[in-house]
Image 1 (cartoon, helix red, strand yellow):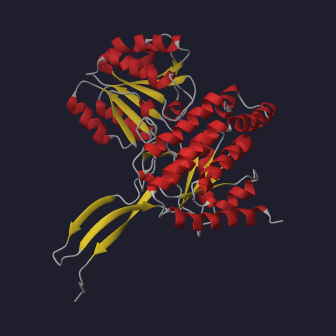
Image 2 (image 1 turned 60 degrees about the horizontal axis):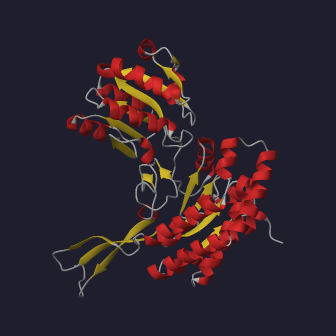
Image 3 (image 1 turned 90 degrees about the horizontal axis):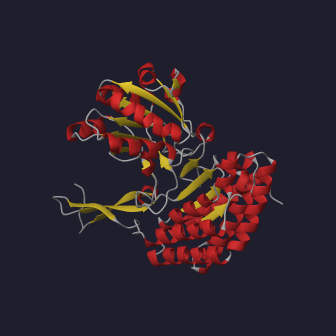
Amino acid sequence: MPGIEETVVELCRAARKAGRSLATASTKEKNDALERGAALLRARAGEIVTANRRDLEAGAEAGLTAALLDRLTLTEDRIDGVAAGLEQVAALDDPVGETIERWRRPNGLEISQVRIPIGVIGMIYESRPNVTADAAALCLKSGNAVVLKGGKEAIHSNSAIAAILNDAIVEAGLPAAAVQLIESTERAATKTLLKQSDYIDVIVPRGGPSLIEAITNESSIPVIQHYAGICHVYVDADADLEMAQAIAVNAKVQRPGVCNAMETLLVNSAVAERFVPTVAAQLVDRGVELRGCERTRALATNVGAAGEEDWSTEYLDLILSIRVVDTLDQAVEHIGRYGTGHSDAIVTDSYSNAQRFTAAVDSSAVYVNASTRFTDGEMFGFGAEVGISTNRLHARGPMGLRNLTTYKYVIQGSGQIRE
C-alpha cells in the first residue's frame, strides 16, 4: 500500500493530466458538470449531514469554540446554498478563450492575447467545508484541475462533498481527477503537496496568518497570499455623518469574525466631536469593546486606552480601535503603516478627497461611501471566490474566474518571415 507521500504525488500527477483535458473542455461540458453537481448535492444532502455530524462531534471533543463549530456546521439549508453557488458559477461567462486584446502589426501579423487556464491549482484551507465546493466550482469553470487539502476539523464533510462532485464530473464526461481531495490529515501530506512544482502551478491558502506564513515558507510553488485583514474606515471632514455611522457599525458588527470586517475607525478632527460620541454609543450598544487614542477617549467615556499593538491587530472579534486624525493625509499614512492591503474605506461628500484617497491607499479593495464588508467574490459578482489576495502580482482582491486564468499570445500570419 503506498505511503502518504506517494499518494499525494500520484494525485498531483493525475491532476496535471486532467488539467490538460479540462483546458479544452467546452463551456457546455463544464456547466453540465456544475449543474449535475448542484443537483447531486441536494439529492444526497443526507450523506453530507451525516458526515458533518462526525466532524462536529470530533470538534466538540477537541474543544472548538461555538463560532468555529458554527463555521463547520452544514444543514440541509446550507447545503442548498452551496448547491446554489455552483449554479451561480455555471451561469457566469466562461473566461477561457476570451480575447483580451488584439492588434495588427505593420507586417500583417495579427496578434491576440487570449485567456487560458493556469493549469493545476493547489488549495489549502481550514475548517469551512463549503470551500471544497466553491473552489472546485471556480477551478472547473475556469478550466483548471484542483487538488484540495482541507483542515482535519472538516475531513468527513469535505470527503462527502468531493465524492459527490467527482460523481457529477464523471457523469458529465470530464476527467474524475479534475477535482481531487487529499484525505489524509497528516502534516506530511501538506509538506509533500507544497513540493510538487512539476504538477501544481500555484498554491492558494485560506486560513489564519500562521497557516499562510507556514505555507509560504515551506512551498516550492508560488503562493497567492492573504496574511490578515486589518481594514479601516476613514470618516472625512466632509462626510455625511449619518451615512458614516451606518457604514462604521455595519463594517464592524455585521460579521466581526471575517477578514473584511473593520478593525480601526479613523475620524477627522473636524467632525470628531459630533461623530465619535454617537458612533461609540451605537457600537457599545452592539457589544463592541472600544479602544482609542487620547483624543478619542476625551470625547467618549466608554472607550479604553489603545496601545501601539492595537493598530496592527486583526481582532476578528467585537473589538475596535478608534483614532482621531487631523487630515486625510494622516489617515492615509496610518493605513499605509498599519494596514495589510486588504480593504479600506473613506466616507466623504468631497469628490476630490475621494479621488485622493483611492489613489493613495494601496489596498486590494478601496471603497468610497460603502462598507468594507463587500470584499467578497459573491458580492463582486464573481459567484464565489477561492480566496482574497493581497499580493501585487497576478491577482488582487477576491479571486473569481478571471483571476484563475493566465494568457497566451496567438499570432496569425500569411507567410511572414523575419529578415
